[in-house]
Length: 182
Image 1 (tube, rainbow, N blue to C red):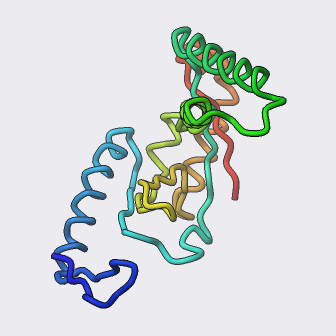
Image 2: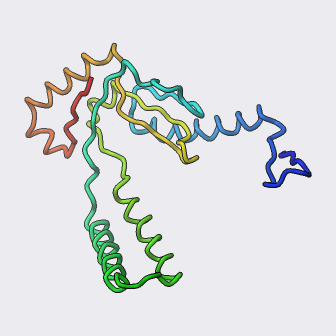
Image 3: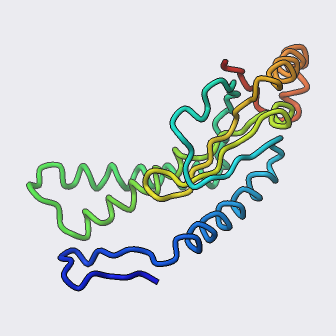
């Protein structure tokens, strides 16, 4: 329930049952964390928000950008072509028609989805690394993958050295090479 002040000008209010809200948020984040856990991460921490510096002292593995399928590549090119066509058509216009402006916004959102794809991490390093699941500054789900605790850094470095000697096998598996950043 949300209580509202009759005299509040902005229809502001406050949640009556804060523990219920906290529990609902935590349950939703835990459900999302289960999806992330299915990727094989060693550990996952879940919180509505983490304090500043929560990753201090942790190492990091970097994943490679996910490859686009041929259908996704075709969609991306079609979206870019449509966006460029609309921009060229209305480049001299002082103001865009509402429907064109709305369509350009849709195109930007769709193109951003292609750029914001999650990275692909090496499965041999994922088993020694973890992720943080929380709520982002804009209210959306935030998943920070690829953090390595100090006690797991040697195992990560070892798997990275093993990969360097087995580059051909990595290419055959299609696994991405990852870099450890400390």
